[in-house]
Length: 168
Image (cartoon, rainbow, N blue to C red):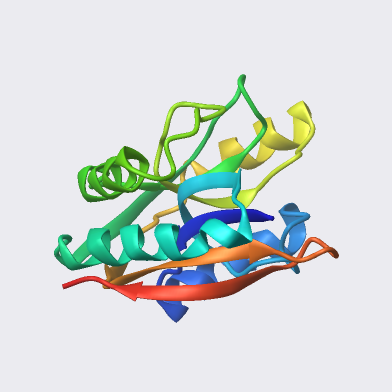
């Protein structure tokens, strides 16, 4: 089964992200806005207890933190993804490393860059237009990160929460 590890931001941040996602993100109906900690990976159901134990240990060894989204950016030319950029990436990078250390150390498709996607699969022209418009927009959103979630993908592509882990 396919799993991923994500942080769901505050409802205020989700509202702001969804104002763009409903128009520019085909995954809008599949999962609420999130910051991915670990990209999707295959994991055997029989091995879930090992993964859950590891994630509980990670959560208990990680302090809660606040994060700020301060601008809109894109991954062009690598991919046509538009996102809210995170100002203080270090806590997410540390969380990503802790999770990958033990169980989930599969190779990533791309280098890890914490972000909140607001548009994907955009044409080059659409991405250029949106980036130009939104680069001038004032983005000043903050969220408290006090948990992360192990999510799994259903057959219809919708992602559902398997378990949430509270940070200390």
